[in-house]
Image 1 (tube, rainbow, N blue to C red):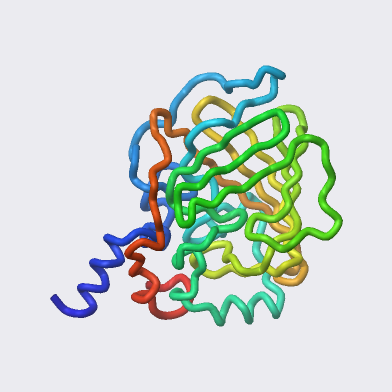
Image 2: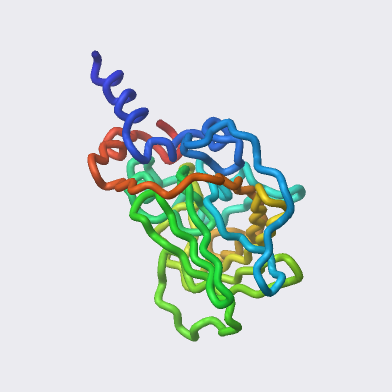
Length: 257
């Protein structure tokens, strides 16, 4: 086997390699999929609700955000316009340096191509991620404001409020380390996201995200992805760092393999 063929085989077999494939090549849910339950129909039924009548987002989900290219989720009439700084950063990025491919958190709105779970309480919503470092994200829905000077983090400081059956999640306090997608779309530590999350029925979770970052983009833009419920599944103990051999074989500018 040639060196190039061996490298290609490793990319297909090792952990985070799935994250480099286009979203629509891996799962019926826009935004990615790992293969467990691949090809199954979206579950049907009414939207489940909490005791207080609010939609219950709990469950195992797949997809719901960009993987290969954030542009796949652009809403009608929206466009991505980079600043000079943003273009310089994006043009300089190499595939081997993609944080997600190196087993680091995806940040927001990116999603790893692995299942994730929502746990919902009256005061908090937690995202538990199977992929990469088994990271978690917490959204406060207890009425608190943003902290005045948040420490920069991968998932930021997320405050959720209800607008009818839609959860509006306002997040600030991000670091500038994660990429929006494998193509390397950047952001700065001034990133501000506003997500509108709805569960229109049993099987789907619609996530509309407005990206606001005047350092990296000349104007805000909106994307939308849909996660699909995976009933009967559980999160697996997947350790991305264990035998991780992908990143060293990635070559060229971000988005190329």
